[in-house]
Image 1 (cartoon, protein in one colour):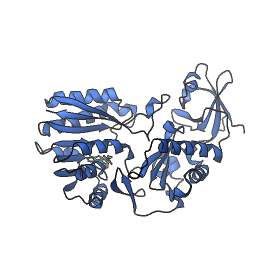
Image 2 (cartoon, protein in one colour):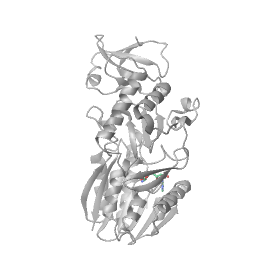
Image 3 (cartoon, helix red, strand yellow):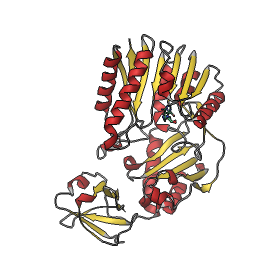
Image 4 (cartoon, helix red, strand yellow):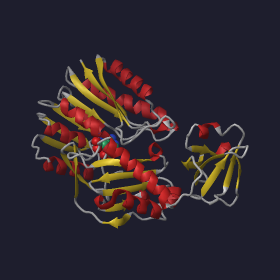
Length: 392
Ligand code: SAH
């Protein structure tokens, strides 16, 4: 099959030859004037060498996102190869075990398709297309998921109305594409969580903190732990189960706090209290109460332009926590803003310590887990970073 061709300007082929999957609008020399958003296209160099196949998006700065660096046909078989490869990778790594039945099954560029996110919740798969080009492949994607997962698949739920741009979101509706599911309870490292992917934020759960929650458990026994930006209480449950004296969860969203309480109950913990309030307000008068504090705010910067404000936000939050934590306390601090890289985050946290007047030691550097793979071709995929700090 021949897809419409896009020709790049001279010298603009190098990034694709290094398997970077984004083609910026400024790199394009020639394209068909009739191209529509979501159309599959073949990208060629100025010398007419084949570079890859991707889907076109008009308007934005990224015009094509590449889904294959080989000449191929984008059909159900193509999607099956991609999705079954991603599924096998998770199985090789033993991410799904007797104690864990939740993971990210497909992570956009990290698994070879920009714009496609699949999360796996005990047999239920939540699909989020971040681009119209991926959304248009929905039928093939659904068929491929069914074939790759076989009998273990219980349902497929499309939640793309949240991730597509406004213009396209209006053309879709969230809903089940296969099977159904209610009251889904998953296990993560033996801890139970109720997942509400229909009403919850993102696909219902922040799967990327699995390993970091496990580490928090190691520091929680007999401690008074504060989990800020707690969402459905991932960190809180681990701390409470690990024998914390007391765990406090803080989130500005009342529905998130309600789910957090439910998860605490599911795990039969009694040492927990929750607060539906802004973290910055909550922290104001809490000096010398906590031994361990978790800071896991939402992405303060979603774009490069917002980077400066994000740094100010991270510094303010970390300074507040460092000022009020007990002596010899421990802070788990995170940033999930892709544009704030690990060095910038490190420097921001160090500068917060200087401002708070506390001596710190870095006990661990933390990252996203292996089911959110980072490849050498796409360093932009590295978004979650964190540190565990000892605060004297
Ligand atoms: N740590 C969580 C994920 C955090 S997501 C986990 O492991 O699951 C970020 C959360 O911050 C969301 O639940 C959002 O409701 C909450 N939030 C955003 N702004 C906030 C604020 N100013 N104060 C408290 N919570 C906030």
